Length: 202
Ligand code: SF4
Image 1: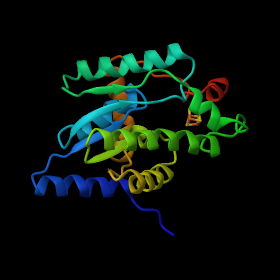
Image 2: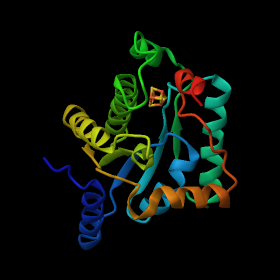
Image 3: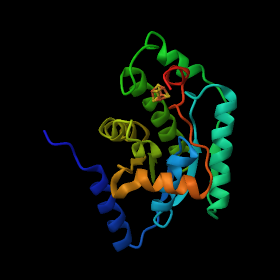
């Protein structure tokens, strides 16, 4: 069966919002500043965005804090008036879900659980904050399975009662643009995904 074109689905949604003169509230999970750069550029004209930095997968703690600080610097330097919500560093839920999957390859079961954890928390927080939609910057990565992210996001939406915004931010050369923006803002571009297992493979 042909996979849905999530980039086109997003474009159609943005066009619909424009036709209806709507500007909904979007709760946007951010994995890091480089991935967020293009996504913010692309979406900030369409939504009232709240950024959510929740990434218990990242190790060590200094790396977590640095990625978070780069996200805050990016938003300030882009001149965007966007609140950023973050959670204190606590990798416990990540290590619980990764147990027994330490050697799993990237895009495997450990990654699916890791992404699922972040989507679930984003959906919950989106509900608490009264958002109209939630989504994640993660689909911009060529290393991530956009179909899985979108399917899991849609399932999470059913559970939390907030609509999921489908996306494939790689479309329209999104990944390439994120590299350009990373250069423009001198962003730190990490050379591993986030967890200690991916760090060993870098
Ligand atoms: S490689 Fe990335 S997505 Fe996979 S478990 Fe590690 S941090 Fe999560």
